[in-house]
Length: 322
Image (cartoon, rainbow, N blue to C red; front, side, top):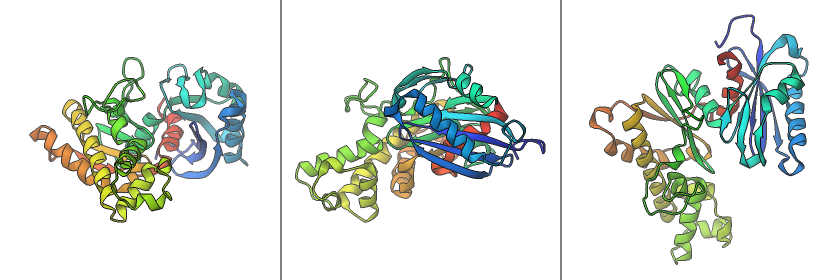
C-alpha cells in the first residue's frame, strides 16, 4: 500500500529517446492501464509534449483528473534537477534544460514530479520490487548503456549535483576502449549491449566462427547485444565467452560499489539482464572475489521484479514520496 484510502491513482510517464511509456497506477502499486508511443524526436519539443499529454489522457480516460489523480511523475534519461523539475541534459530528446514540471503542471493542473529514469527504477524496486524491505540498495540497469540508482538509508541518493549513480563510468580497464563520456575503459564501454556486440563482431572479423554470422546473414554491422546473448543461450562458444567477459566486467565495477557503499542488495535491470545466469554467474563470481571478506556472504544480487516497467512504476510513485 502506497497511500491511504482517499488516494486513488497516479500517472507515471517514462520519457525516453525511442518511446514514451505511460501508466495509470493505483494506490496499491498496481498498473491499471498503459499506453506506448514512439517518441517523435525529429518533430520537435512541442510534439513530444503533445504525445505526453495525449498518453496521459488515454490512460486516465473515464476519470476526473482533478478528483481521481493525485499527481504525475515523469522519468527521463539524463541528469535531472528534481527540485525544479527540469531535465538538465536530454541528449536523447535533443532538449536541454527542459522545464517539464512547469509545462506539464500548466497542462494538467496537477502536481508534477520529474526524476532521472534510473532513480525512478530504483525507487520502484525498493518500494515494492526485488529490493523491498532493504535499507541500502543499488539498482543497476544494463542495456544500451549502463546506469544506476542508489538507495541509501531508505532514500534515493542524488549527490551534490544530482549526478550520483553513474555506475557505467566506473573504470574497469585502464587502457580500454574510449567511452562516450570521453574517458577510457568505463564498464559501459566494455560491457553494455553495444559493447558486447562490438567485441563479438571484432572476433568474427578476425576469423573466428560463430552462429552469430548466420543470425545476421553475414552482416556484422547488424550484430546487437541481444543477438550475442541469444547465441550464447543456444550454446555458441564465441558468444558464451563474450557474454562471460561482460559479466566479469560488471562484477568488477559492482565490487567497487559494494566496498564503498556496503549495500544489502544489488538489483539488476535493463534489457541485457534478461540473459539470466549467462550474465549473473560471472558477475557474481567476480563480485565475490573482489569485495571485502566481511561482505561476501551478505550482499545479494538479484534480477529486477518490474523489468522494463521499473522506471514508469517509480515515476508513478513520485507523487507519494516528494
